[in-house]
Length: 554
Image 1 (cartoon, rainbow, N blue to C red):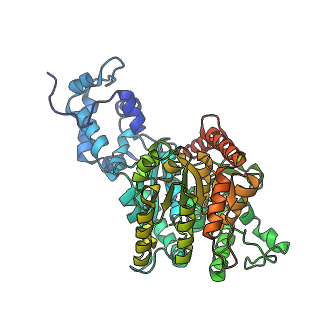
Image 2: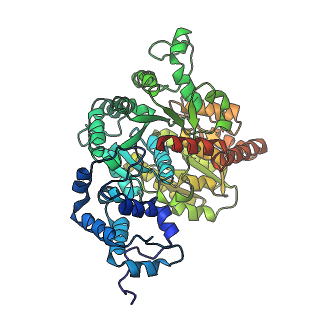
Image 3: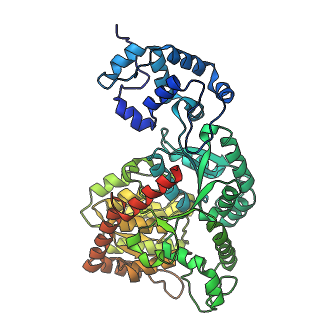
């Protein structure tokens, strides 16, 4: 008689779906338990433990399960022609038990359970603790998981808390935090303190984390993927004999320039502090008006060169067709972008703030190609005068606009200012604290993108075919603006007046010029198709990523 007991698998699924979901070889497991008694399955990335070691790690419940399996006749428990419901009835509680373990156990319990299943390859991913660095590596991590590789994502306590509030409960990525080294209220968003803390405190904690994970023979780390701004993680991996991949989160032209810093110094283009001998703001370490920060950032990039050269792989979030000239200057670089959320758009991948999805329903009500989208990333700020000019410039256009103003920069005076704007614009404009940017850019109502030109925003705008109005602030954003306006010709720049303010008149004029420029829109759509092709089967980035996955597995 068929049991009325509900399946702990939520809903019974075909065997093929279970195999795909779990990435496990059930038939191999059955054969190894039946035919190789006393042995433990091995993987390409771990040594075979002794029989005694295996017995100690199994636990009483799992030992009992193995004894039950050994006592059964040697028969394939699934059978190609039998429905899963019949098999569950025939096999009884043992298979229900194993299904329950796989479906409901914690990550740590599941990893201990793998002595039966065979180990999965395991990768550690560590970004620099900033939104623009975390987001692309989180998207890369999801793609890695989709290829049957386990990913542990290592961040600081502060960033971990932010990600936990926005990530879905059933995320396949395991989050682990390292101590901040900062006191509460010490300014976890202060760039200088973040750099110093991350440099001085994290290496030992990172090494301890790897050693702890590697205590399990079936869970050993096969690769460390680290943001180039976390160069010490690459040093730790190299000293521990673990293969590593560096990830460059900005554009390839910026990396080519960083790699050639010694040559720039030798040729007298910059001095040893990174200051140009000729006036230029387009170096990727540029912080206009902040010479101390510029010098620290330059030294950080300069020292990074050594660690990156220790890596087996160097990945970047770009695609070959977008900037082949720069990519050809960087030996061995592997472009795997554009890294987009894809079918996981609803999962807020790598976001520090909750996303206000009401902006999407608002966009649905606007005419096609009519909305001005203004967003300036996770770190840019305005003074009150510049806020006034931007607000009035948007209003002057007479076009609907969507404006993102982060909650972390809002104060009482700004809140009153925004309330006044909202009362004037009514339904013709919308202001949100954070937004699902890829979906906004992909929306047919979006006409143009007023952007700070951070690399993630640049690549997302290109991937969605949206023209840019460029408003850079520091570092690589100036170089990205040059590419957008002068090389790819998919946008226009905004020019400040003699006081450094971008006026309402400038904003109004450039928006209207951009919207009627058919040449810019045509170029943007061409880049969109190139980006799409690069990540579809047979595309350049698709093949690069598949090759990388195969290499780290073997």
